[in-house]
Length: 432
Image (cartoon, rainbow, N blue to C red; front, side, top):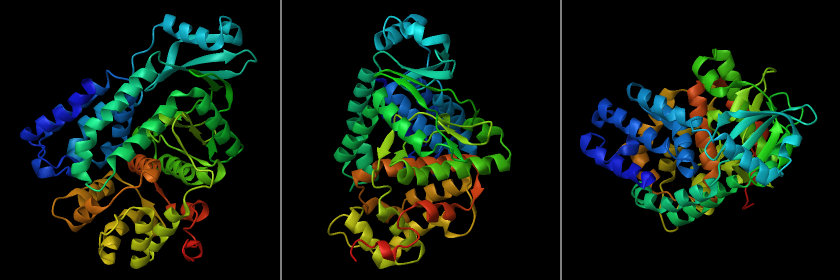
């Protein structure tokens, strides 16, 4: 009921000034008072819930960077709290989970165990401890009932379907919802998460830019990993120097594009709470509950179509998008208009160097959603293949974080090294 109240509350506030263009964020129809009430409403509802509702809140906290600056403050304050906010479990409940998952002698596995949580997340909390062999460890414990809560939350996704249909009539909302539900439910299985984390840890072992904590023990609802301390990425965003923010952005982007090739997976939860900068300067990556499995690496068409768009190969771009399912069957598309839609999105990799910023993200958000614009009209005609859901979610989330960082780097060189099909788009044409 609380989750369902969100779209209703937002719709009700339309009469106060939000209008029908909620996603357009049109300045002239948004009152700061209405925005503040909306931000407080989102936090008051999502902050009381765990499971899918908290996941939604964490996702929203990334995209506050797209808001107009004079309206962003209440959202930034309200939504970023959701990255770590969750009431801690009673100590008795913590011990109960450990006993059920590790046995009555669970204490014998630890030299020390801190009953006070060191961090909290959407479906679990983390405790600091010392393993029997003397290693400092992080013990992630799933909230009792989190599985039922998440499943219930996901059933409510169907309530959002009319909103998606208004925004994107050609989206197969049912298939996308099923895909999202399956991926989110995977986060309940800590043994699956442990297998994913082991794969990442091995792939990035001794890497100069990225480090992944080793897994020490795993069961369905308890995960014990190596403790690697670091400066939270949220603190780098808020207080870091330009050099520190640039370095963090470079590492985050390298993880995004290199992981499919190196680990056969894509880390699919890029909110700042899942990253830190270690004492050695490497990006520490936490939480592998959400991952897209890519045994063949990133789909070659992603790199190929990105490069063809930059090169202005309009007809080839439209043909490729149609073959991948982005252009609905029978829809006639003007190739030049498609380039006009896509090329501004690729500005960060069009030149040698680019600085991400909140202003750039707001400009793109407005361009793609403003009523009456050619870009918005064409964007609304496009479809969305469910197979690309996680890739899109991670890419957009990572861009949101890069804009919060205000990071500058030679982003194109990262794609040339790690994104299949980007360096040689003609040589990877599947029709050749």
